[in-house]
Image 1 (cartoon, rainbow, N blue to C red):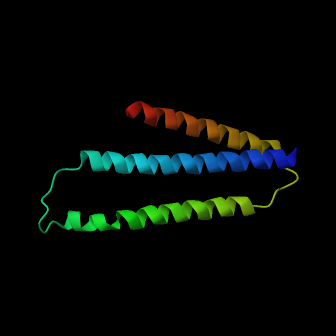
Image 2: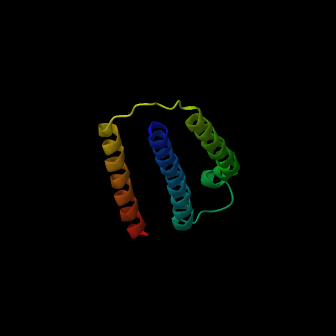
Image 3: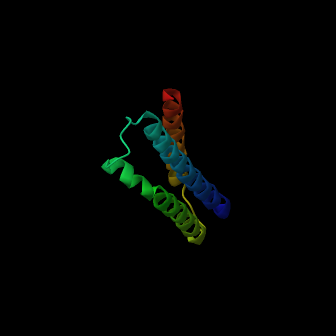
Length: 105
């Protein structure tokens, strides 16, 4: 059952990372939707928009790196119940915070 527990933990970690990426994307969408209008002439903020594609590709590449890292984590045969309880509690706390954030939308 050690392999199963490690798989559960890695799955939880990956779900957290995916959820965090969703939060980043949603945050950017909110910022874009609520940003104050600005002129198109020599406005510095508009010149910085060219980096959107760069940041998008960096986020995608980093996500792939995280996935590869998770896949390379060795499986422990013996996991104590305390660690399992701590992870379960942390996951529940994460879900609670996520529900709170969803309620702010």
